[in-house]
Length: 365
Image (cartoon, rainbow, N blue to C red; front, side, top):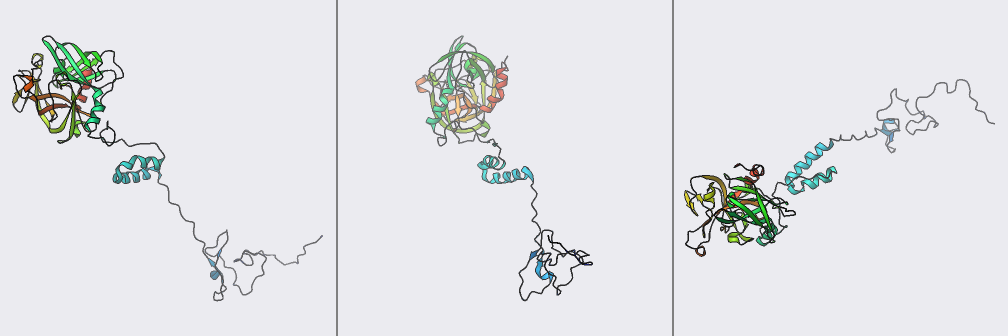
């Protein structure tokens, strides 16, 4: 067994620094040429050790020559949370438009989308403005309306707005009717009842009996319509169900005056149509003394008697108006009459604003 012998006085005062503080070896002999350790720990010397510089003959043998401060730990930027991230996304989105929804989803991990401000497209991409495509998509939502009156019959059109058979049409089409028959584009016939009428806007809401699974039309935004826009009209002129014509919006906000008198509304003449006033003149007969005026969309799409209550459709397949009045030149026989490109439609936003009233029975009840 070996013993450790220590002489008196040796190592009585512990050295606060290793023998060689620059190499970290406490048992290395002290070089007498080294200066005494500083009273305070050299700057840059950390508990975890000291960064050393390579020693060269030109480098003085001093602690400052061999030691350099260790680099301070890099400060991390504080996370500013998702709000700064979303603000950045919003700024980028203003420049890239359609990438907004994708950017938010990718950066936040949330399945969020931004509602589009554009009008819904009913027709497939690449078919916008194609009349055949629009006709195929919307025709199932347009019907023929036949009303039996006390003094005869009237024929008009209507637009399906719910799958269970709610149909919007003109008030003058069904005014004074004792019974109403509706025929869909596939030839199916239904009996309909009047839900509500509004003679001041020349609108009516009827409901098919025992109907379901019908194709409702998409109601657009008539406030976005511009002069020159392509439009398609679908209706049943002269009882020719599903007739399609096309044209453009030729004017907006036209003041059209129609009769609110049932007896006057039933004046469907052989080659004329429903009486109305426009530009200070009367067309298609006498409107009578009881009238109402509304703002209408003017179109040069061919409209004829029977188109009343039918659809005026934009290039995306959305309903933007309910056709209500058309001018035909006066003639002794229907063979001499025809569309002269002067037709009018009630803006669909007017219809949407009036739906609650119509469903409650209308303003005439």
